[in-house]
Image 1 (cartoon, one colour):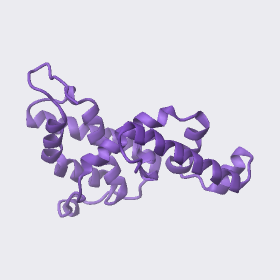
Image 2 (cartoon, rainbow, N blue to C red):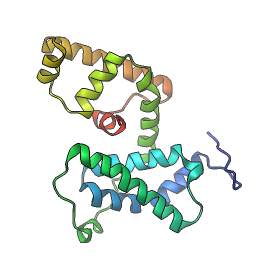
Image 3 (tube, rainbow, N blue to C red):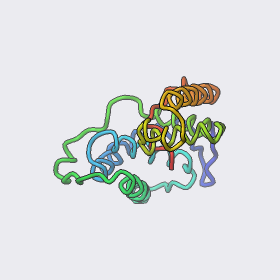
Length: 189
């Protein structure tokens, strides 16, 4: 994927990978300060880089401006996640500086989110509703079955089919359909 930058040059996948490597530690540190260590911070970091990839032409060229741009993204998206999840306590800044970003190729995780973003709208309303209520809203199977007026076994069967259709859609989009429930919680805004 190549995207010409109006200021000259291209902001393609190679540019994005260098961009992620350059800013990964800063975004991780801000994410942990906002959400605390753990999967919420990972989700926030992934979402920030996903949005940065989507709007890469709007990213400024100089480091101080990029710093402000990414920090604003962490702050704003973190606030949305914070309101949704009601995390108990922010971590003191002194402890955050000791942490390191999670190991592994998180650009692959961003690519999975992009595929999820492409496949999810293609699902039926019923499948989307089931997946979002289960993973994003974390509604128990019993509560969701009562809400829908069906038996719990029927709900789990529908959910299994919805996950299968989502995996197939993601395979068509390019990944192996490895998105997790945590990915749905982040993406389902």
